[in-house]
Amino acid sequence: MDPLHYLAAHEAADLLARREVSSVELTRAAFDRVRALDDSLHAFLTLTEEEALAQAEAADERIARGDAGPLTGIPVAIKDVLCTKGVRTTCGSRILESFIPPYDAFAVQRLKEAGCVMLGKANMDEFAMGSSGENSAFGPTLNPWDKERVPGGSSSGSAAAVSAGMAFYALGSDTGGSIRQPASHSGIVGLKPTYGRVSRYGLIAFGSSLDQIGPLTRSVRDAALVFQAVAGHDERDSTSATLDVPTVTEALAPDLKGMRIGVPKEYFVEGMDEQVRQTVRAAIDQMAGLGAEIDWEVSLPSTDHALAVYYIIAPSEASANLARYDGVKYGYSYNEGASMWENMEKTREFGFGDEVKRRIMLGTYALSAGYYDAYYLKAQKVRTLIRREFDAAFQDHDVLVAPVSPTTAFRLGEKTDDPLQMYLSDVFTIPVNIAGLPGISIPCGFSRGDNGSRLPIGLQIIAKPFDEPSLFRAAYAYEQANDWHKQHPEL
Image 1 (cartoon, rainbow, N blue to C red):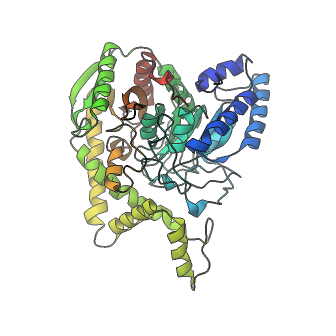
Image 2 (cartoon, rainbow, N blue to C red):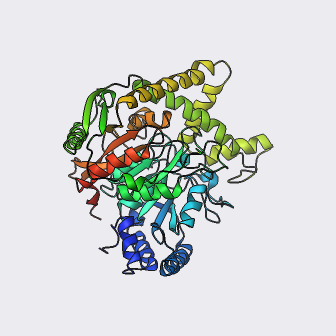
Image 3 (cartoon, rainbow, N blue to C red):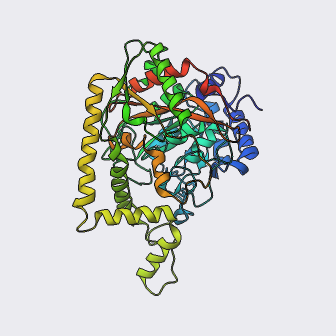
């Protein structure tokens, strides 16, 4: 195996700075890896090799001039929910199969300014609706640790590409856990920043009050570097925060002395995988050994209602957001019907997959006359309660620590016929989106699958709004005390 494949992005940047390797060499090695592995993993939907090599040559020139940043020349995969100028952006859906955006998403624009090399667009659950990667209209992504299992979703391709050594890092989006859950299942780091910290301009919308863009990386330092590159105010997004972006790399310290960590009782539920429970508790004990004060008695009593709140608010917002796909302006268009209305109906019938249709119907029902107060309005009130409980917990604690998912990666097809079981995969990640908080998943160990495969387990750290420095401090200290992030699948 080429020793370049599993370098962290910051390690690759050091080699570039010392001129021991070129960006063109990194990029060619990445595409060689993609050609060797992606027929079986299916992490990418579109590859942009010609453009990437041109970007790599430009990056090498920048490095030679001494004008490089920490991400200059580092190959990245972009989740196919982010608009990329002149490059097909499908959102994992037939309805956008041939859509080519005329502009870049804000986060993509920021990475290009930093000198990134875009390998291509990563596979995903259609319109980011899914927890497994199986809802992509173009076929599922497989987990590099066990190809009989899912890598998590909806940022399935982004997670698999980083985990398998095809990309040095990736961008994903997180509406209810879609960065943290696949990061956990794929044995990598995944960050969901505070809502409003990264502009949603150019992110194809699912749930506008929940969606947030973030990195999937091989190390906490890499996540910090990407966060600093893509965060910041953007006047084109009315929800974009006007706060300065903290230099989170300065928060990366090797110990947790004086840090107050809370453990919410409601995140250790009956029915969760016992190996997950034990591994996460062992990680929290280790954080105590690094100097943190641990409070095991934190309570967030409305956690039980978070799933129900999410599955009213998110589909309601999806129902409004996806109304724009009518076959008139862009994307797939059925035009053999007897009327405009029939064409619109058939466009959606053939263009959307089952899960997207399910959520549009759920949301349209919740917003309909006679049900709006009973469902949508009540969900918004409970959302406020959930946020207040987090606020109260953060008065006495710097961060909260919990599992990312109640189980490790499940088998392909295991939950596709039972949407409720699939939705329960996100029971520990959804509250963070409802409250607009920052959260990170970091590797904390492995369990054994029934076929002997090693299945990664993630530790979730949650901080108060816009306190990414505390999040990174806790994540980095734990990561550095272990080598979980340096273990890779055998491919």
